[in-house]
Image (cartoon, rainbow, N blue to C red; front, side, top):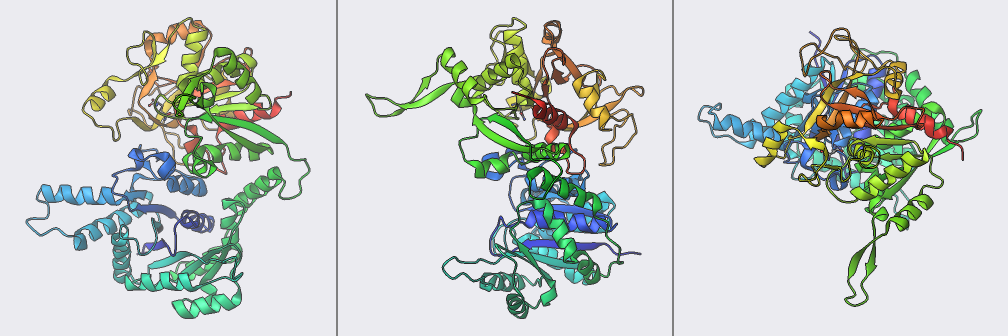
Length: 604
Ligand code: GLN
């Protein structure tokens, strides 16, 4: 029998230098060689899932089709593999410990003393092995979160070491390490990486490959030095200088024959690589950005993203909204245009923070409706499209609603995602359907017209203080009205599915699950993460006022997509789900593409 292979990707020196992208890129090249690969992440946190973590501190919460709330790296894995991941591909220390403690409480260890070694270690090994089985893969690539030497991730190293001694020929380690070039010295230093390798050795692990991350490519002299100090052949040290796009990495690995080297190390059958679809995508991104010469001049599309966390700096934003940013890019590049994103804090369209003359303290000065209109007009003068992403809570809500009203009245393309759809419905209810004071139960459950409300079973979970996983989470089928913007866009992209049909990324509509699936209809599957829904009691009034619900749950009860007909607005559309989770470089999301396409046609 063919033995299963394991590749562990671990970090040396410091975090944030591209361990996740390295893992994803190894997956891309091995998959392009025709190997069956799965990618898994072991996160050191004690949180049982990533759902309770603040996105501005930890980055976006990425939701899998199963509904599991995970780390943003899982999003990169799906984008690089161009397919859905399994539940078993993600674990946190919290998950592992919870499982072991629950087993202990139910006497599954039969009176034994339960300890980190062997019990936690064995649970980790078990999960890694299971992730391979869940994907029916031949190679499992596991990224261990954090850096060697952290207290938190030591059990993951122990599990990896144990797997290696049990299967010496089937396990290899790749260390992604950083080699600084201190400006005063002007020379690359390999010493921190040597230390990291020695620390790894103290865990009983010898990495066989080093990915040398640095500002510039590591030179031959330093490769030799590092090789001698770290017991790694110089040819197994892969130069990984800073690059301007993460999508170049698989091509760089391919150029350096990294895939061939892994095949040799793990005694895998050598296979030819075909990476042309990926290469074509990268070429398109370069042409659209003007990095390489193109037949067409660079055309910029200005898209404003209006949200609440936006005064925390670009650094935080790119992590908190990574899937949305990438989804816009994939669609834009496929259309040959370059997206320019403008991050706008919606509070700016409600009030100003001013210094009170008497007390000297900072206070909020509410703007008058005329001041708001003036500010919005000025801000959006040169904007081609507006996107309001998902969010929670009260902050900046009225500012977002004012912006949505402006987009509707001025014919500016508008795309609302999750909260952005709910607020679009509220705006329409208030200003067109005559439902003054329309509101979401999230902000004021006592309001007269709760056009957005909570579902009963979720109410019960919240009353019991169970916030973790209390939302509608993961992939749900949705039926489309074919003669709408949404209906046409999905069908043009080949994303619609009949019962039992499988999308190449793995999405399939099963009969009998979740609501009343009809054999005759076509569906899409999209991923959710929200507590509130359009209140079915208001649907007739909203439809009578002109809003079209172009996608609903199969039983027709839940409104999944709302839009205005093309005749009244070029693009005014909101989705209750998170389409950004399904956007892939090789398969851009149809609604993002429709939105960016309308934005790029906007002439002023
Ligand atoms: N806060 C809203 C809800 O829970 C929207 C959530 C979101 O945008 N992800 O329904």
